[in-house]
Image: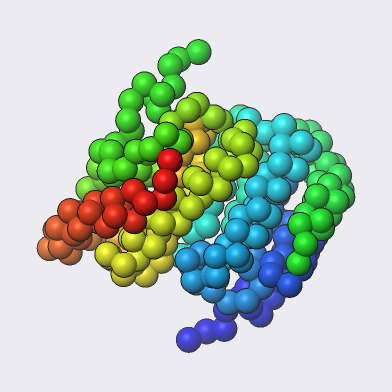
Length: 143
Length: 143
């Protein structure tokens, strides 16, 4: 059995970290704003976590959704806990836009287009704001 | 604007329904056990719901996960709230298997194989058990 990559590494640029979880920015050039909420301890499924930990994790996921909506005004939010490739609980929190590379497909579906570079640049330019608001909003959720 | 299909129709075979939500079986020949948890009232995003409703909905999603694990012993659980095509809050709760049509891809990714018919038939044969356990386990979650 290979080492779990989310036990061995952060899995992205850490924005917030507490005892239970970390919130990381995903470096995906097509999907600026894509954020993950990762449980620190190794757990395979949500229902392997204690009920209090599940709740705290889901609160963080929804807090990320709230901040992403505020910062990006996406056309839709996508939330997913899959883990087929990396079975260590992590949530994808993805702001979606009508002109993003995959919309209206899930981001795991067929690529639909190239987003205009100026549009992508404008969204990338909001990442410092996203980080700041995540720290303010999720830093408060406790540990 | 077209009528919302999840306001107009059940969206699957109803197994449990309460004031807030309904749990439906998805009729997908490749993915027996695929279940959705759908909010009854029209809401676009999780964070458009009241906090109590969010929690009740997520409790139901995790209760479905628990029952699916018990009934199918899947290799992995997949949870997702996307709604790009139908922006009315609904959760996909999907037991995944190493021999399912898409594994290890998300079910929205590239098809990987045909699952042996006998394997699919054996999983389909468990659907009455799934339904019964969902009623027992989620019927209790209250209204």
